[in-house]
Image 1 (cartoon, rainbow, N blue to C red):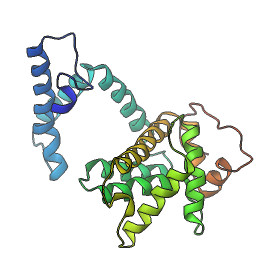
Image 2 (cartoon, rainbow, N blue to C red):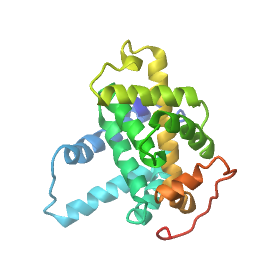
Image 3 (cartoon, rainbow, N blue to C red):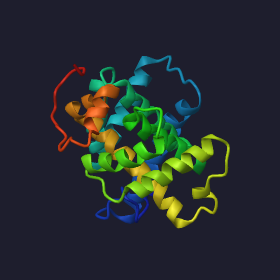
Length: 234
């Protein structure tokens, strides 16, 4: 929160006085520290239903105060409306993406991000690196995400395999700038894709099972349908 709302941060409001910007940062920082973080580390029980409802109202107020937060609120609304109807593979990818956001270790984050993407595109037990390399750039094209090609996709998958099999991860061995960019690109694609999956029902239904995914990534497939079909996938 301090980074996001600092003077040059992505959520700062330059139209506010410096003191007001600091106060706004403190408001969000305090709310996260008091009400969000404790429940992330342990079970927090609210015995008073009035207090629990007021915490929710505070969160709602904070969401309304910021334009970007309003977009997040819309995304969460879409997610909650379809949470139980999302395909299992999509739910699995969301779970891994959330874990990746919390980890402090690059090797763990890499494995989680690649695993989340693999949840969405992998359907076969052989030629995994080759299929991942071919399908990931196509997924990037579907969600209009730039900068990720087949060479990068293969490099990411090979690095993930090295880590999960107990070997040194060459990509992260010296933690050079390219490694940072590679992982950031992969996570950016994952976030863009998950948002599309949550907001676009018809798109998410194309990830409902292996057969649907194979059809989606067929070399003969030239377009991806989009829409807002409500309810569970047929």
